[in-house]
Image 1 (cartoon, helix red, strand yellow):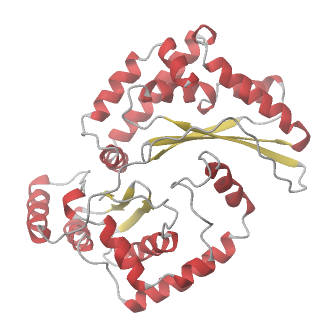
Image 2 (image 1 turned 60 degrees about the horizontal axis):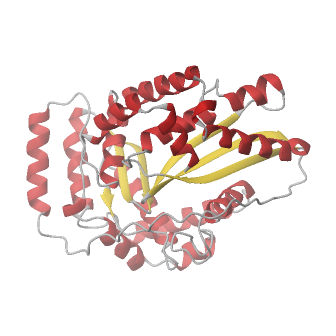
Image 3 (image 1 turned 90 degrees about the horizontal axis):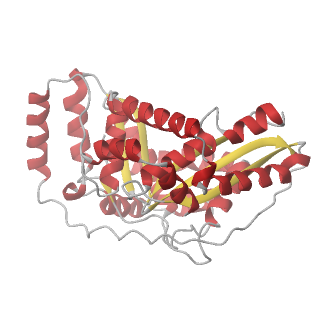
Length: 360
């Protein structure tokens, strides 16, 4: 994995076409090394690539990663192919109304004119007007050796890997002249608001999005447990209400995603359209309950803690998970020891701390 910090993509003039094309070019180039691509991601925190590689191919993959720090891989011809295929994909994506609704909801987390809100969705016209030079400029903005972390995780003999990494690091040393990354935009909290969309379908979906603290914040572990209690557990109270008592929905699904300087909470419930307003009332009422320590049952807190600890252990015991956790820490400006500190904070979080995090 090779996470690199960069300037945010969500400025008003943010080159969303360049970001998407950069992802596509890196994907096709990385696959040409013979490694199995796991993920390439460009977002407001920076850019990251993760591959699954055998020991025999690891050196070649490392060489490709180091080379990509100083020069955008591929040619003008490969850029043209990436542009055509991405434009075709965008044409299909614009038929996906659900993606448009999700983007609209997340945009409403920020005030009008916020630097975090893209001016428009990524469309065919935006992709076709993006030039090769714009993608190269975006690459230079993100990929800088002095602010890049390379993680090698797995059943490798580390001595040759370390030697390769050092040789390649020496090779790219001093070749970068990129400016430092932009500072993270401060979290901006809007007032509670609702938004309705009509599709004519009998089955409706209720979605709730909200800000949360960034990973590494003093109350992040407590917030993570609050979200577990709220709707990430199969046995969460809100899920029991929807599924067992009311028999109106299978339950809610909740996820936390990291952003620069904060996190997003996304919860949704698929339910009959005529019951959607009731579902909103239930979600809000459960949110208020989470903010009162006396309302939290010891059993749900301990269940949430057990699942969070097991999930963290699973991540750090798998090569892909460990590289992801180290990359997430790096994006947040944290040391690798922050992973162990998070485990300690999960063990230490009290019902009062969980309620306070939920209330905030």
